[in-house]
Length: 116
Image (cartoon, rainbow, N blue to C red; front, side, top):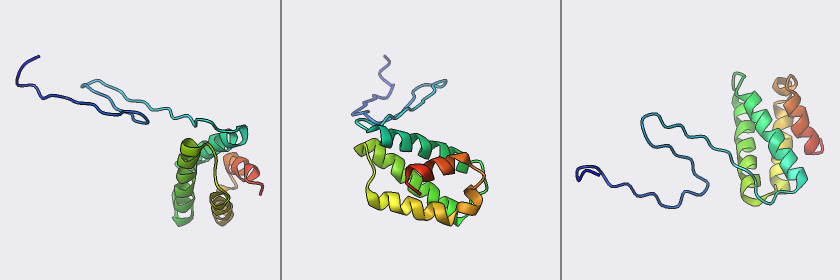
């Protein structure tokens, strides 16, 4: 190692994704630890709906829904479950965006898992 090269220090990298080098490629796969089967199923449906939402022109309703879906995904990844308050907010946002979401089977899957 040359003395003029910078020193690199990497600390805690848990829950992190990074790549080093000119041709490096970083890919992240996060799995919810300790989830019950219902939370795992909701997590998969949430991810599918978020992917579908990325394919349409966003409006205020779909942006709000995507934000809540992202928070739900994060909560399941961190805790293995979702609280009733978050589930209720998702229900309300799904109802608000129903006209746009009716073309996505993923929206029906999330709604079904929320007991709508």
